[in-house]
Length: 34
Length: 532
View (cartoon, rainbow over the protein chains, first blue to last red):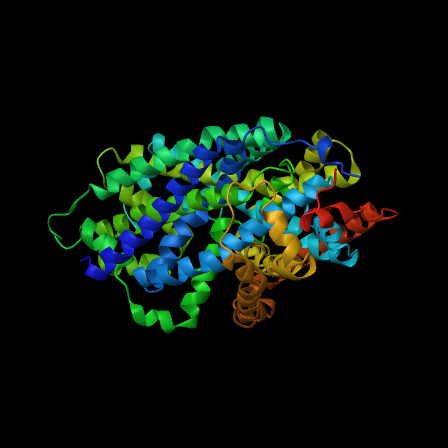
């Protein structure tokens, strides 16, 4: 079964990727250059 | 004199980002990453993976975007001329040959595998794949007969595989023939969102499967994710795990091949590369870690169990994609639908990568010999079409595997190392830092200066030395090649050498009598003194 360590690594890795993607999209919208 | 204005340019920022992301998102994301993660410590693999991404993947991505844009400004889109003009060193252009040889040779074997995906998508819809998907043995027989290696009730020869190869080959060249903006960019804008939609649909199906076999309550989605993410922290002390993670980052981002250099050469001189580069990385990671990580290993665990999955992981990425996944999909309700989506998704991932592999060779012929894009595409089409037949008919003799190793593994590390050293040390970190931030939407943390100058080249040299000792020397000595196949492998290596020497001769021919452009203005600009 999924251990606590497994959940932590899943959440951290997914969170880092979703966070980076959201940051990039946000910056692009802010710059007005799509 | 700047010649960049004469060259084609991308039509939109989102277009170039999706094209670069399309180049990066390939079969390696969906098939190689899950196997590597499961084999190398599960969740603990993600730690060296993310470290490698930050100190190796992102810096190399930025180096290629920046050097490519710099080359495009002077009218050049491939590594030989970009290395020469950025360093003002004529000799370094010969190292750049790897940036044309690598992607072109990868194209020669990758396009054939891509065509299998189209064939398997077709047979998912029309039932033949479902007949074969009863067990691994019959799926392997199906694949082997499709490849023309054996003959059975499904296929009596290579005919179908060859037809799908022709369709795939013509389709790829048709996209490249239509140009950077009208072909590659338009194709990426349509297909990349489609790829993500297909991936999310398959992922949604897999994560909602629960416990598909009530007789095996432990074979459920939670345990499937556990197989992939439960950390084995002892693996962090194993150098091989770090090498595997660094290797995966290399393959997944398509860095060290030369494709991104060429794509970036079609940017305008003031186009941002920092945010665009990071966005293409984030798109690639979303496809790899979130979508691919949620499909392959959890699905295989739910239907095959832990011991079955361990055997599958050992049998390699292509076995997983072409043998295991169809069996899994056809055990689901409306399995043909998900199998079809799976192969179409992989075909899109493959096609957005193969068009990018063609571009360096096309740009080289077009930029250096000024014969026009359409003629350049036709010349490359004829050469690669002939070369592909060596892979198609030498498949059983290890031709594809040998080409894969030298072009798709070893050449990447060599070119990546050369790029990192040129950028941080010959081009110079001050100019490099200024060039990265030309037109940038935001500034990178200053620590990346140190990473690009010291850590990335050092990390790459360690990988290069390790791989040379562990893989290149045994491969060179043909230690794992069956005696009857050695003549085929030797012929493949002779072909590779001929390609390299012809490219060196062509680079020499193109630069005969040509002087390096005046880059005094670039240097002054890098020092903050803008030239009017």
